[in-house]
Length: 115
View (cartoon, rainbow, N blue to C red):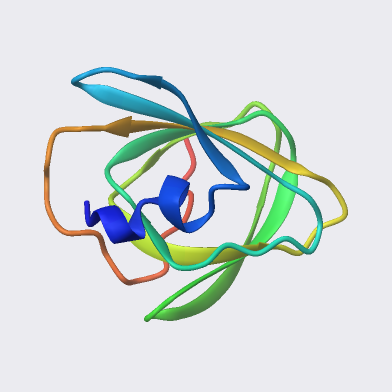
């Protein structure tokens, strides 16, 4: 991952590292309605939602909206995107980022893939 595109660097008020070792890094993400992120990258990751939320995700491939329930766990392939909380509730998510390199992040709008 390009360190200039690390979400902890690009959006330090929203992302924080809660655990890290040589194989995985766990990020906690929190925002409020109306909060936006700048473009950033995630390696292959597992995402677990701690709250329900609605977001707009964007990348070079355009934009799309997602609505996710609390308690959902899903796979996220490596990706580059930006987002905005377009709902009425705070977002609270954990990302378990794998440190094995599998390829370049996609600039398509991937976002959460679910189950």
